[in-house]
Length: 199
Image (cartoon, rainbow, N blue to C red; front, top):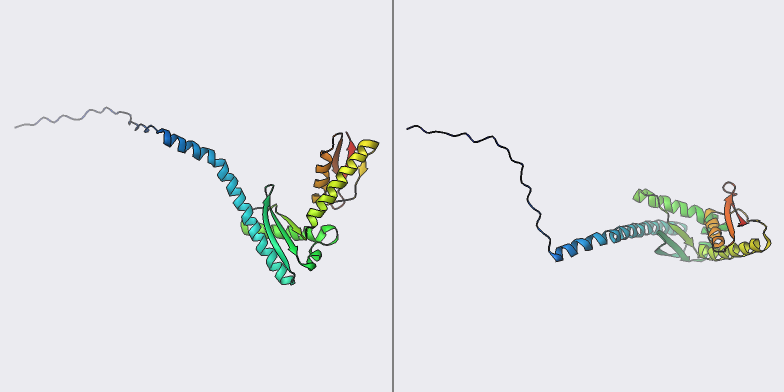
């Protein structure tokens, strides 16, 4: 008995893609909710990174206070997209501010470097000691407003004394709130100053 064997034909067909199952209304709502939450998760990740920065800075400053045998309470917060660390309480804290905040500026930079060493990311944290920055902000805001008003009335430009970047920013913000005047910085650090002009 002979058998006839028929060879299969060499026809190739494109693979058939399985159809995606249709989503139910509940599944579509869940997907849309997940998409809308994505920016919020990014914001919460940023905030958690800032909280982590504050924690690292707080630990660093606590060790420093212990080393110096200074008393102080450390408060951590997040404001305007940056970690804010405040030290309040002890009578010795004025030594950590120094003349016109020079020691505070140096301490802030050291604290930022300690955070960067731990996280690998450059920190923009703000450090305040004994409420010095808060008080200084109020003084400089008033100085900026009054200088802007004087320039507006007299038409003569005003040059303020050299200031730190923190101080100049406050002056610029205060001047910007007054219509008819503007401000700019001139000079090189550490003698950079704000000039307030009409217009």
